[in-house]
Amino acid sequence: MIDSVPLLPHGAGWHRSDALLDYRDVIDYPRLQELREEVRPAFSLKTWESVAKAMGALHNREELFPSEEDRLLRFNHRRVQIGAKQTIASTSRIALEELILGLRPWRKGPFELFGIEIDAEWQSDRKWSRVFPHLEPLQNKVIGDIGCGNGYYLMRLLEHGPKLALGLDPSQHFYFQFELLQTFARQPQVQYEPIGIEAMNVFPEFFDVLLCMGVLYHHRNPMACLLGLKDSLKKGGQLLIECQSIPGDEPIALFPPGRYAKMRNVYFVPTAPCLEAWIKKAGFVDIQRCSDVAVSCEEQRRTDFSPNESLADFLDPEDSSLTVEGHPAPRRVIITARKP
Image 1 (cartoon, rainbow, N blue to C red):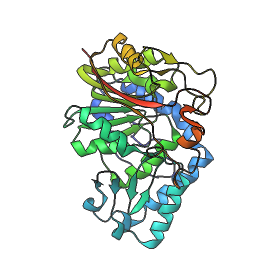
Image 2 (image 1 turned 180 degrees about the vertical axis):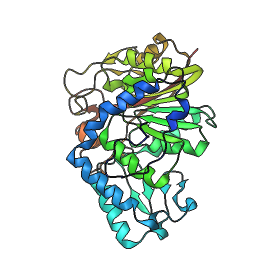
Image 3 (image 1 turned 45 degrees about the vertical axis):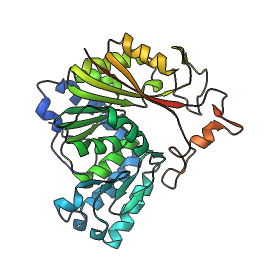
């Protein structure tokens, strides 16, 4: 049996049981094990060895685990908070701060870990405030977050009592950020698998609710992605898509010949009507556009925890309605739909 943290060397992280074992009769569990084995070698690189060792060292500091109450998640209107500031010794705080900074850039957040504020590039609470009102009740539901990043939205889902919150994202970087957070949060009903949207066939008719945010425009075949999402939803299940978009009333998509907002891996950037047409052609019903807003430099910006270029560097300095390449500047559209 492979547990749910099979990739971390040196005993780092929280070695919890595999939440997906409970569903091995309804998902393609043998294929999931194969995929875990396929990605395992990439997580043995020297870069991650040092991170894993540092995580293992923190795991052995008893004051970081004083009680269940002190390591439970807490939420305010913005931050995901884990641990209490007063429980951490100064030496452990220094070691934890060094590890957090060593895992930069932090794209999604904000988090607060034992009183250490992680001000991420994206103020993801703003997106969550646009997303959450359009989700069906989540209590005791099986929920997927496809392209989950470092798990900010997975953690926010836990406020609402899901049976399982499963994140999929192939990024090694995000995986280690999530494992750092989960080492201290220790939430058994949340799990991260470092695999991508191409693996949706592992989960046939499995999810009650699926979130897919910031994913479609990174893929060469968005229709194939949508069909995979539909197949993995239970009948009547809800899909919430959040996608980068361009302004326009026609069902068309931009296919940038080079980069888009300095990103290499952008293929189709649809208008909102185009995204709705894709979702309809994929066989979904009850399609509703919930939000369509321009990306702002207040929501996405450079911080000490993400010191690389950010949105202000991706836009034309003379005309913020355009990217540096001259394409329409990005918007973010949210659409919900259901599987018949």
